Amino acid sequence: MQRIGRINMPSYRIIVVEHTESTKTGNFTDIVGTYNPRSKERKLDEGKIKHWLSVGAQPSATVHNMLVSVGILKGKKINVLPAFKAPASPEATQGESQAAPVEPVKEEAPAEAVAPEAGAAAPAVEEAKEETKAEAPAEAKTE
Image (cartoon, rainbow, N blue to C red; front, side):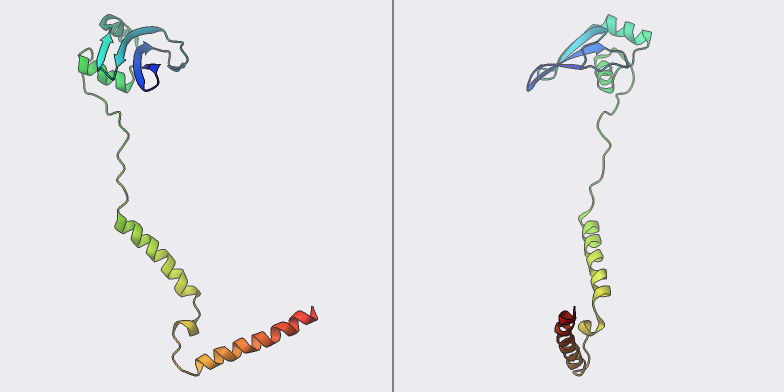
């Protein structure tokens, strides 16, 4: 099918094209019909279509479905829609996103900050902080 027509007013030519060419190049072998999707009007030359199919031409999936619905070809229609992908369930995405941040936080947290059990542990932490503050300016002066 070769798209022709203005913007937002498509109509299509049903053409025969070599497999190496594109429909947009304009290098087609034969015009075998037209299709207007707005009015659902189809004009197909049945004799030309049967000739090209007998020679070995392969219709696209959309044209195949059109020929089956008109009655030129016999057989089943081809599904031209993309394969269905089930959307991810909200429970699965929430469970994964919550589990990932919780585990690294537990690993990174120091033991004293997580559960201070005795009152003596808190002054020991404060004394260690004071010692590091006192040492830091001395080190900075020596450099």
